[in-house]
Image (cartoon, rainbow, N blue to C red; front, top):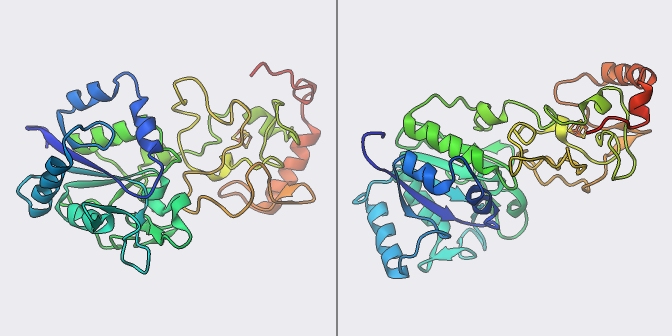
Length: 315
Ligand code: SF4
C-alpha cells in the first residue's frame, strides 16, 4: 500500500462526531501533515471535504462498484438498524447507511471502527434505533458485519474505542495499517499498542490508590476508585500515557474515568459513584482476587504515610 496513494473514505453513522473533533486536534504531525506523510488520498470526510452532494454520490457509487479502489474505510458512529431492521433512521442519498457500510466494507483493504459507538454500539447502542458496532454488539462478537468478516487485507475490523478516542490513536493505527506494521489486537479487536494498559497506569493519583487514601468529595487529590466511580483499574486505554491535549487526563485533574473504552460502555451504574458494599467496590481491579484485594487494601490503608493522609503530594 505504500508505493502509491492510499485511498481513505470516512463515513459518519450514528454518533456525535466527537472522534473527528479529537482527530482534528492532533499535533506533531497535525492531521494535514499526517495525511501527507502517509501519502493518503482523502476521498471523503464529512468535516473536511467540500465536493457537491452529486460528486459525493458519484464517488460512493464508484467505490461500491470497485471502479475506485478503497484502501481504508473509517466508520465513526454506530450502525443504525432501526426502525424494524430497515436502517431508515440514518440515511445518505436516500439509502440506509448500514447498506453503505456493508457495501464499502466488502471493498475496503482495512476497516477501522473509530470510537466506542462504531466499535461496540456505545451510547447509541441501546434503544429503538437498534444500533450496533461494526463487528461487536457490546461484548458479543458479530455486530453488524458478522464474526467472520475480514477486510480485503485479511484483517478483522480494527476497533479504536473511546468516547471520543484520542486522535493520536487513530493516527498511529492508520500509520501502522498503511505501512503494514504488525498491529496485534486483543480479543475485542483493540490494538494492544494503545489498549494493552489500564487507564489507571500512569494516573498521578496512583500512590493514593496504593495506600487507599480515598476521596468522598471532588476537588481533593486522593484516589476516586472506592467512592467516586473511577473505572481506571477496570478500563483499557492510553489516557494516562498519551495525555489529552498533550497536557493532562481526566483522572489527573480529578474527574473519574467513566470506562468509555469498555465494550459495555455506558454501564448502567450512575457516573461519579462507585457501587460498593460497606465502602468496598463491588468490582475490584481487573484480574485481582477479591478476598486478597480486601486484605491488602486494609493493610495498605493502615500503613498510609501521613503526607498522603494530609494530601501533601503536589500533583
Ligand atoms: S483516580 Fe482512578 S485512575 Fe487514578 S489512581 Fe485512582 S483508581 Fe486509578
